[in-house]
Amino acid sequence: MSKLESGHPTTARAKFLAATVLLVLGFFLGLAFATSTTRLEPGPGEEWTAAVMEQSVRAAMKETSAFTRSRALGRLFAGLDADNVEGAARGMRTSSEFLDPVDLQLFLSAWTRFDALSAMAEAENWPSKAGREIGMRIVMREWAASGRVIEAGEYYQTLGDPEKQSAVAGPLIRGWALSGDVDGALKRVQVFWDRGEPVDTVEGFVRGAISSVGTDKLLEHVNAIDPARGGDFEHRLMRVILKLGARESPIAVRAAYVNLEGDAPPDWLTGALKVIVRPWAKTDPRAAIEWLLERVDRPERTVQLKEIMRRWAVQDLDAAWGWWTAEADRSADLETENRVLRSILLAPILRGMARVRPIEASRWVEQVEKPGAREVLILRVAYFWAFRSPVDARAWVAGFALSEEVSGQAKQAIDRGAAEREAREEGRLDAAAAAPDEGSQPDE
Image: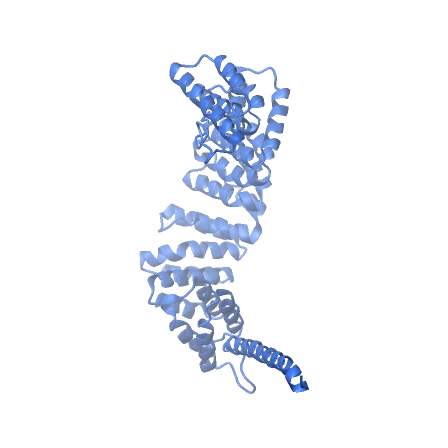
């Protein structure tokens, strides 16, 4: 074999590798060229003129990736000024019907920084109604947040259109609070409320104040307002603070709730427990339950206790059951009221226990006070117990004084459980039949 013949495969492989390298290189060069179409700064000897800005904004708006587009626009608008803003505006208008709110915020916030009045005029004339409202809100919030509250407020007074006033009232108050003048913003909110002006501005105030000074400081600012002696405004204000501050400052919010609760929680406080304990229960259900147990007994507390126990039993049954048994040991001598409360906590956990430890669950079913919830759990325990011992399950059910209908349902549940156990052992089970109460919840 000649050298030429023996080297031919190697030559072919070399050519293939070279072609592959060129293709990869060409791909990345093309990618670099494609992603460099957005000009983020003027060329050598070039200024940020309106024409240059317009060209760059148009190119940036063609980016299909929201992240890439926002990053490019952010860098472009850092150089926005009175001389080139009209070019940027022309570039944005070409995509007016498809503007992303984030893109619009980047543009109008940068413009408001040096000429809020012109930025507002631009937003007011936007062809899309949705874009128009979003734009006006952005400008008003940024205008007030920059400390030019008096200018922003004066502009608001010139708006004769109730729809426009409604759109910007909340952002005006939010920006006012964001500026750091929490007391001034609070007084203005009260004026809005007393006049019955277009929208509820309380939430805008609370959001701005929490972002500006935090929930703890906000609660100090509103301490002079006594909800117990106040009216609808004071009640609305405290409800919103509890709702929005629950995540940002949970300890302060819980303390505020306890102070407001007193010996008999007022009706206007209804709904606050839910927004306070639900975020907390996701991270520390035990602490949330123990705090709820210290609250005044009322239907709202009962609902939250059941819901948290149900979720906890699903997420970590062993922890929930361990807590429950420890609490039961500490309160062995129970009065009627405590028995009902303990039953409320027990029923959701027994659903999970019935599935994994039915014999242990069976020892506690009698402590579920409500007959309907107890019967549901009897059927559930009997079904899962039958997987282990149908005879023992039947003997346990026989110890209850059940109606003929429920007794029949229990017998069917045990028969299904026994049949499924047999099918599993023989390896012929298709799809396991649902437990007799699958999907339902014992409603204590």
